[in-house]
Image (cartoon, rainbow, N blue to C red):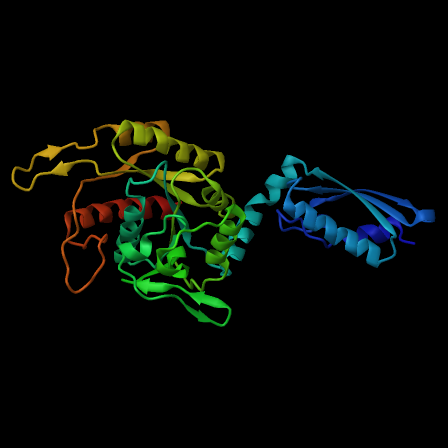
Length: 353
């Protein structure tokens, strides 16, 4: 029959599913009780998070190990590790988690583009920030995580589809920016009727099964609001930073504040606010008309204790017969120059840390 020391030696190499450290390192094997006559082993295990799917998987792993080595029945109890143990290993665990996401040692800077509601130009901001970062010499990728409302491929004029190399998906490159989107995997613009867990799995695939290579920045175009997919992103990428997009209308800014508050709760840094559709400037008179009101961006930045990174007027990109990309502003376009300034601010803020 197993002794207490045998049980400890068997369980010490098992990993805490959240801290990515062994139970020996975390002191996770708390108590061991053995009833020899019944070949019953009881163990109390400390882990970083209890009552999760990961705990269930760990439970099955431990029961399997003990039964394989002589136990007839196994009793398990779980408790949360002390805060000082979790804090000791949390930074390394987050780095390991993100490394496992992309499967590369050098992690890009993750930047999520979020909004409180649809229709404020969040996807337009995403593609143009990506283009501006690329023009600054950065290697950039986009994950179109707005899985119900994917639009990045159309905005960038992408007509190709990703290729598969071995077990990896090769993202589509357009204008030097790598892109992956649900739109590549849906035929004829069909509606998406999947439920939350299936969508979460798809999003995970965009990280783990795509050959991103050596990126400096990976931008995520989040769905509007604070739903399942936005929550998944917050949990998958602990070090992700966020840009909040809103129009200047007070109600749009009020709703956008919810997305910002979720960033706070999940400890994501907010880089700043972009006020889109800030005004319309007449080409004839140069007069500015504040079509959607004024002040929303400033109020939102104040609530989120952040700054307004830029105010973007209502304008169309230049017409270009050679390159079809209906939402990309050219480098010499007034909005292209504004995006360049915003991207420069983001690079300065992210890379000085």
